Image (cartoon, rainbow, N blue to C red):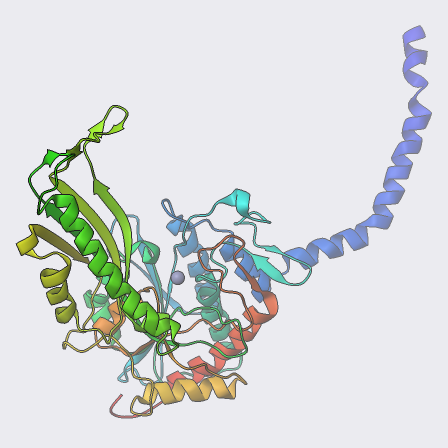
Length: 450
Ligand SMILES: [Zn+2]
């Protein structure tokens, strides 16, 4: 009885609280629901955010999730899909929108699935949250490099199909793995495959870079990276002796000569006579010498071996044979007991022996069509550039396929591989319109010779 009354006493306040809760939830429901709908609405921006939330950074990119996301988008739009695998667990997704004249060479739009790693603590917003700030900045690793173009290609095609546009040339989109680690299991194997040959590609677009101004940047070539390792050998000797041809002396002579070469080219850049990406760059990246001791290095011995490593970047205009002669005769000459090793991290000439670059003048009809399409979309192109680094485009150019590097981002800070990589929603949406113009123009271009 006592227990019973004790239990009963709080009932009234509870009922009151329940009523209050019920009332407040009724009044809160419409706005709350509206808010949720707005957040989850299927739109170009939310689809972009959906792709950005898939973690495809090295060393363990989630390729399977990225491919399945893109594939479901493509199937919804009505494109043909095919998954290729040239290396285990490294899928490559190929999408196709057949043209009305399949005998004409096709258009290929390329982007890579992977991204470079992140240091999350240095970010304002988690790098896989795709957080959109009140002023429209979408923060995510890959937002500029290059998940933007991956989704813009799809959105542009979605819109063109909704407008009942019919392409004349077939359009393909490739999503390749491993670009950020050299593309050896991705684009390199893809271009060498029968599947690629069967696409009969006439022209390609690949990633470019953001532009801080109003003009779109476009890239007609990449620089080809070389790793150079030079080694010097000599008799070991007491640290107190002055004698000729020690390993350290020989290596240091080479470092001096290479430094002078670097300076002479850097002077050209500083004088404004060439862009950074138009000259050969050579930068020391490591030095290795000395005889280790438990506390550091043995200080009274001159070592018999010394080594240095350099990062070289070769523009397509450089003559690789001349550089090799320079290395053999001046940078690591055998007469100074030196050896060298060059590791070429990609091609520098195409299969016909021509420099790896795409012409950006009216002799290349694809260039004219592309440029015109940008103008029609209300944009302006900056002076075509050589990219300072490398992309998968070099593998396509190696096959003799005209390829332009292009990511439609104007008025955007260049944040690829940086902390707080972001892209503004309005810039992203404008890029879709640009691709609608570019894709429709390229696929409608008919000329017997191209
Ligand atoms: Zn990239």
